Image (tube, rainbow, N blue to C red; front, top):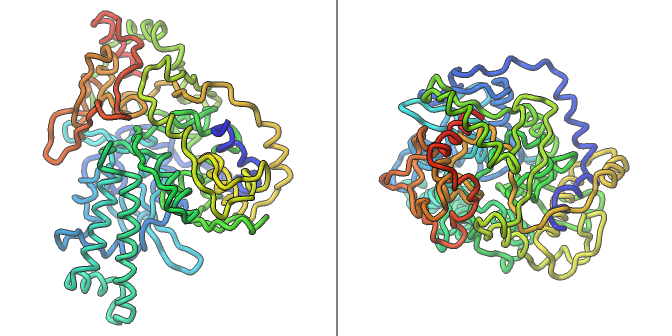
Length: 557
């Protein structure tokens, strides 16, 4: 099956790379962050929780480049907002997109937002790009205190951000006064190259305009805050941009909630549809693929053979990233900042959880370094939730262009025809990218691939169930973010709200996002294709008092 191939096949190319990163783990670990400690560089009152990381590991996750190149670094520092002279990167502007602004620290000297990092290419050009933290660092706000959630889902609207960035670039190119101030900061007193700079601004604006149009459409299904059609975006990047085949573009019309990523390294399957394998080498291919989809670069040349594809991917750093994630724990409900738990209800809810939830969402010891998680894949026909995301993945195909005649797994597998499935094309690019990192121990890697390869054992039209430790901090819920709170999820589907605002303030009673209308806020409409909040009716038939008890137990996980 395609999903089995998507990440497992990277074993054939990657074991040597991971070996290079093992030395990074030899140094003595710093003390873990303590709950209640102030978040370094936070621009307001924000506290950390104890999630098993040291401050060094947290800062590394937030700010170490993985190869993403969104924009030239000096452009990002110099760029003004489209409608004012205020910096595009100002805290207030970053906050309106719901990324997390940050003050300068030793690891982040220019005060980039959390999940933004500086990357320098071989020619010495510096770029700003995204790290995994941009999508997988959350924060809940309650009564004036921000609570940082490492590995939690971002609340950001990437479409809004990239649209604002595109407009800022375009207006800067078109407005002489704005361009003059920008060029002064980027070029200095010597304005040689000003015409080329203006042209480059327009080229970058056009590229972002195309990306937003296809990957983050405002119609028919806008993603809004806390959601993104990640696979749709990755397919467009690889099939259309990297292969230089615009006819392979398709609207990304199945936004999903950003998954939380604690316990990822201990899980056999990741992604909502089980498409990414975490065991063994699968994590390296998964992280490489996600980096390529987040403004990484790759030059596709199947004639390179063992030289692989030249790419901005930092594969050794991606291996280090996974080792850092292996140490991450889910957060516990912080009673210092949120209302205390009703212990009687928690105990009562625990028994109800075993009856109604544990078959798909097993309890685990969240801090056990030896914990192992086997995902429960439930067919859409049984689950009853929206099938658009999984169906889009299975149906995606594209023309192959220069890949025609090369092998599905870059060095192994069947020859690719003039058209192929999206996952097969992703396989080729991901493995070619990893091979391009000049890795060692290729023979050992092939042996490992043969050892771990096994057939897929679940219906491909399925969604994943996993342990719910830390679930309280990950709203909105269901794979497509169509349910604002855990209480709403415990209501019969026909009683769930059909439209709601995705707020920023945490609702500790219903356990989710504030759904009150807000100026300029995003209203999610569950009647749109891909946004259905139907299905997952487990526990919804319990008496109301039992559902409240079950909810109290979910807070405690």
